[in-house]
Length: 501
Image (spheres, rainbow, N blue to C red):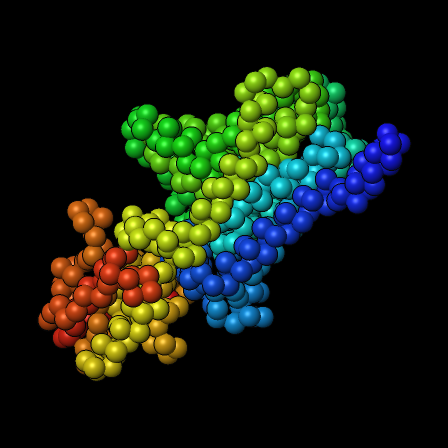
């Protein structure tokens, strides 16, 4: 009887999927869900804004380097002007990042850490959002993961060619977001802090990798040199803004606790405590610390947006997997390890259900509905009807978000001009005023956040008259997400107005 029982146990073990297969299946399911959501959810204002960039490809833009525009151009070339077309390359980049992370974590923390790190990463809200949205964060996160993977491969083989792979990844990172500079700072910290790695400064390979990164980044450098260094001024001009304040640091920590999930963030924190004596285990923390210190310092005087630290998540997920698999865990580590995946999955499921179906009618307080163009197609259809009924020649806006959404969701051929932030559209043409009336549309908000600039618009027209208010709601619900004010303007005092993106 005992022998039969042992045979039964061995048979059960034989048919049970391996740990790696189970993780791969879970990651595949999460990826499929992300791909589905990318196709059915409306665009955020920033995604529509970057889609406008993709219509005028360049080596740089006002806000960011060019990778996001190239990414969207590739996707829409295959899938057309659709949400999937705009996002598909971003979604695929999250899959590539997962594959690179699987390999890197396995090299650094052991074979089981690879699939576990991939699972942890894909369970975060950061991976679900950044891994779906067509923003600069998607290629930046892929580049950071590829950089981590290349250095992990180097620790195994000591083959200098991996420094060239790391340099290529860093170059892609810099063409995505300037947070790519922190990758180089992290590698420098790693080489300096680990005593037996300092001799690498005498090797040509790290320097060759840095030169390759600079070479790949050079198109954006040359573009900025020819455009008054506007992207550098915009991004780095925020470094010293605001006075000393403690309000933003708890906000930063709270946001990351939600985006990572609380218990997974605890594991990530323990993983950051690795000491330089272990070159492999110190690699992920070294790549994280420079950016993390910067974000904490920035939070002492201004808000750090929740998505900014996304480039750190692949390395943090690897470090968390290392802690999860370590022996002799403290009570806090043990409880965090036990609750990390279930809690992250619960938060992720709640976020998907609310974002896709809006089961809780929060209206203006629903961050996903406000961020995404939920209800915007109906707003655009109403606005198109008003344009036809009033014989208007074009639509005017005074903020980039409204301009981007209207360009994407209004019928093809509708002229939309931005007369408030023309500097964002250097490739756009001025709008000829003509004699026909125009429609000015803006979002109404309370207090200082109000986007209604009708008083400013009145300086350029003889008449500015309100004609409609349009509510943005989810599927005809009575709960308002946003409200748009529409004005009929006529009698232009200038021959040209603003720019058409």
